[in-house]
Image (cartoon, rainbow, N blue to C red):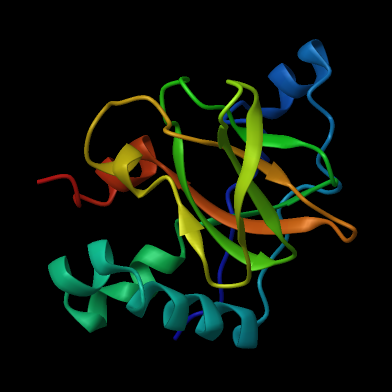
Length: 161
């Protein structure tokens, strides 16, 4: 397998670097970095556990798919996706924890679950346009590190067919 080589732009909240600087969306810790061979192989392993990829793609395609993922670190408390907003990307948790918030009995959002390493969210965004069903927040105490792929990258790979 070839090591991951990211594109030159980093993203946060689905926006490019210029948008980050102009909107103040700087709650991430660092831009994407080049994955080590070990990290790249782990990501391929994660992809084999995701039904969308496992059922619809030959295993030989997974390295090509893995190259399209972007790594981002989020500070605790940062909202990755907000309930009701259109889904923008698919995320796999590399490390850290994420809280899943949904309306509770009183209508306020309450933590309904916690996601950990190898858990994923936002898979629906790759194949259809629909709102997020939950808010996902970096839980802490350590940063949440995710691998993500947006719909445009998914389609560029020819996977939307």
